[in-house]
Image 1 (cartoon, helix red, strand yellow):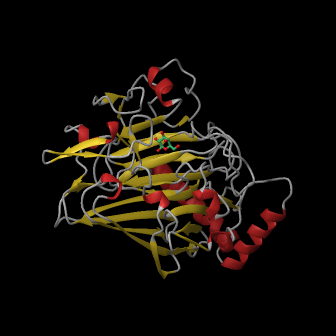
Image 2: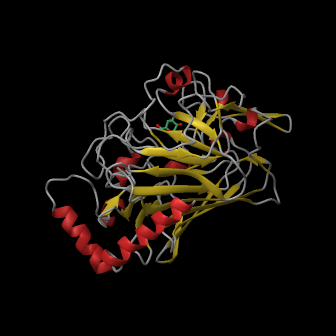
Length: 394
Ligand code: GAL
């Protein structure tokens, strides 16, 4: 915790001297864009690439910023975080959210939930089946034998209603109709993304239903803390406050056991390079083709879940969440088929996700925390990705 405060103080020193107003930021961005030796993306994307009509609804790009110049760009197509500019160890604004430069690329076949708001149920449901009050429900199997991230057309592919109440927040709303993707109940969803005064990217989710249903919302931001387009994330340093995780079968469905991470490559209780043990002879790593597992976070309530540091940028990201789990996905299925806004391809393991969530396949594991939502109740949960500079980074 002490180290965290030190890094926050260091961060404030950086921003207060080099980038505490927007014209300085514009200069920083311009300078970086003109810099021909780097392809790292560090400019706010052009809104024009996001202004179109999908499913009869207008899409756009919304720019959120705080007084320190931290700037997020979010499109209401899928509620996607398209870019997130934060200062690195030299005060240079760096785009740490990997994404595309126009909405068409997100609609295309190579989309892998880049930056998206995920629902109704994030992660996998075994065989696309679950039972509620004795009634069986069947979902579309879009991931081998299982249903993943809401099914065929999850929340990542719908156009959300957007309202920007101020410079730093965006409210997204969506009514998922009774029966949509096989889920029961009209689900009214509200997601508020905010760039906070203390340099966090906050995700607040809210939902109500008129029939008993299941819900597990998350954001699927892909991060590269050295900057979109800067290569492997395997040298990033990761620490996760989880003594246990949920091992999976070959289709990435939890076996139901909750096992200690101690003496396994899943032990990130001490800060470790992401790639340090990725080639270990470990069955779980083989199933995930690397890291693609749910960590059982220690503690409850809004608490510190993880810290990641970019080995080149010194950018540190601290994750806080109210959720019981954190899916650490190391970009194993990135295939180098699409070009990001940086101009670089979505190459294998060039971004990672830390998806705050309830455990995968929760409806089929009564011992896991429940994701059932009943009429009259309100689903509410918050997660924050907070940025600072780690001066002691290599
Ligand atoms: C992750 C999931 C991975 C993969 C990825 C998208 O959330 O755990 O297995 O599907 O999304 O490519």
